[in-house]
Image (cartoon, rainbow, N blue to C red; front, side, top):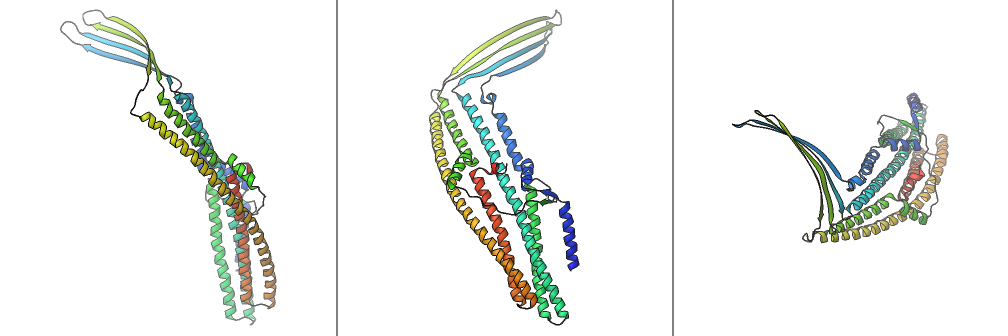
Length: 428
């Protein structure tokens, strides 16, 4: 059994050596380059950028050019007639004034482009946070796997010692079965944890748009670096940098834009329609010679229109737009209040996580020392196998709580940076 374990460790060591190294920053860069959601958001941003133009807003005229060829053959008793008519038309249609709607449309396109850029930034922030948590989640499962392996090795050593002592007559079958059950239980926990580690690596690969069978050797370590923050500074950063809140401000400007567009319906509109039409006609008679006729027409017309009454539709549209604008202001106040409360709660939780981390580290240090002393006592026969097993489980639980406390701290810290809107700068 020991030989099999050594071979397994050797195979895993070769596998890890051959695996490509991957730091947290490298994982973030890969995700920013390859993540599916970011690519979709960037595509939407490019669409909004292309749409943001004066032409789409309606400032420029429409120019059309068309040509027509008409042919007819007239059969009668006097003389058959073949007629070919050619005409070319070039026309210009231009709305010179329509209640400032062109400027309003252009402003709306600019706000939509900014809204799309903020959406891309939100997706980048979300991806960075997800990669950080996925990276450290993989490290967490790896650390747990190591803890389970250590406990399993202790149980394995105990099991082999029980078998040896049975051969010398100091142990009975009951003692061997207890040691075997403990080893098999720890072995089951190790195998389940191995699956959890592989699944965590697959989740990280998905965020980086890598194949699921690609394995990286994660070079960063699972450690917590406590940082002291001021709640007032975090709140100021939230109001300045939080992309979700910034998008809400953009949405409010869009509502103001809609209100201005509704009011523009009260203004008259001035349109110009002009162009040139050229005709050329060829008549070919069966008994006479053919003849040609040509003509050209140039025209230019201005149309001034003013909607005097439309059943109150314009008034209702203005009232609705104004109500929606006022509602948007309430939604901004609600979002600011909600974000402020959430930030305060997260800040308090962050402080608690720092204390829990200290407690977990002290606990695992005591449990490790207790395990070392208990092992010596067990080998010397000072304590029985039940007591030694209890100490093993205490160490296992303490070690697991320590790595989970580290991960929970990183999770809370990352969420705090994300809410304050500085996670991109932190990992730039």
